[in-house]
Image (cartoon, rainbow, N blue to C red):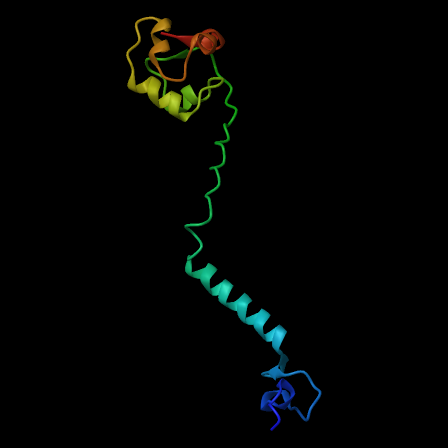
Length: 127
């Protein structure tokens, strides 16, 4: 009795030599399109959000405002303080919180202002 070999199986017998298709497309193309559609659906649903590292926020663009003269650190507005060189929003807000200052050196208590920055700011500051 002869054993059945792989060539004898029904799915191997084909009267057509054409490649198998799904909806008229070759199987490889159908599978590729199906994967692309599924990946797009997952992306649109937000499923990948927890795997994507958020980018750094864009640095705040500082508008160049010409100073009319020295800025009084005890009465200046947030915008006037931000117009000072090397003073960003956070430092300007901290200056406002730590008011009033009795001397210019008292501004060293503000986080983000050290000796070097004070010397750079000194020509533009007053009390």
